[in-house]
Length: 356
Image (cartoon, rainbow, N blue to C red; front, side, top):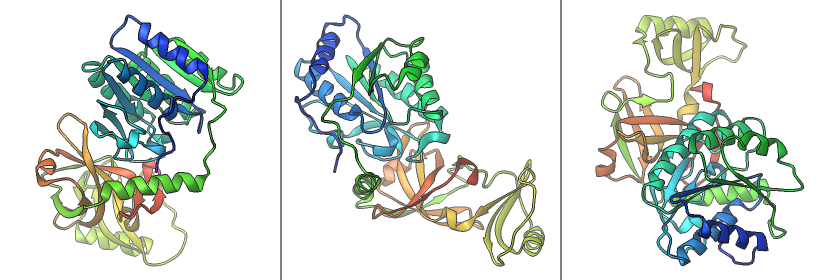
């Protein structure tokens, strides 16, 4: 299931844009497409990519719409190099990915900008035209995210899809860093319900994790990133027992660094009062079915996995992943995401950046 598909039934100004790209002397040409939710960004990118391919140009797609990802895997920013017509980005195979670890990137503005920057640089070395698809997140942190992308990538052109000048504020933010072309949202653009979006994501998750197997990772060999766990001195048995008795928790593991970090399960139900500056408590259940990324030595993502079990005594984890043994051998970091889900595609919930 995909929301966007290739069509030439588009407004005339899309053909005018295509003609302008074909006539542009600059190569590689970097084009970023920006707009609100369901404004037709992916449809426009798909149209342009296919038409440019037809004209014999080498085209690269950078898919950074982590909430409604076309190119697998989800929760990453991905780069693909189509060689022939495609009906939707879901048919493309990514050649490089950057791990974000969530489908709601509001707390990962920096990572999103870095991801687009890095993959656009790779794409620019091998393609004539680089098309960057973005999220529909265009207010608050979303606007800052778009500004950072424009500042880092310096697109030759940024196409803003909008209704009646609704993105004036965003155009002002982007204009110092890129040439902006404002286009109206196509009359054929359709709104999708939250349930439809979840259904699309579920199918993507299922497709990605199909055929996965369980692997064991030794955290002494492949360290964990994007979490406070395993940082600092491991707490002694006496310290774990003391914290358990004081707070009415079953404290499974803990470390002492700038502050105490513990993994716990509630035994008693009552309000605890403690300073978050001196103690971070991570609920054990929030680690179950947590999305993780296998990161290579260049900082790019080899693929994803689901955390099924963590053994704090042996510092090992059990992870369900479609990656091969050869691919896993290239991992130098296991990075925690902030979404929990099942391999069936059912999403169990999002976590805040500071929860782990």
